[in-house]
Image (tube, rainbow, N blue to C red):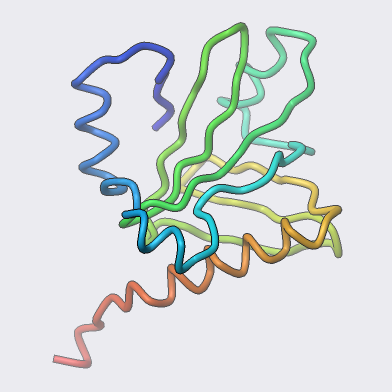
Length: 141
């Protein structure tokens, strides 16, 4: 679900924390060598996000932040900031072409251009963090 995070509303902050957890501690961010992505150019997106992005003439860019139990994709439209929280268990990342990553959550998706080595390294961090979550399967019990 998309949230407008431009204003400090405790109810929205509580929902975000409940879904993807709290930000990483300084020690964890230091260990990961940063928890935020560089600027990511959006090449295509789902209709919900597209309807917000076409409202202004600015460049369609977003950033991704790694949190305790997931990631948050943030982008701006009409001087408002929107957030798409994605818990690790709902996160799907695909690398279609050589320089395009697709981030999926249910019926939302964002495809970003990865034209720098730092962007590829960031997505490797996200995938490694997702793997470390280690959700147990019923067969393991």
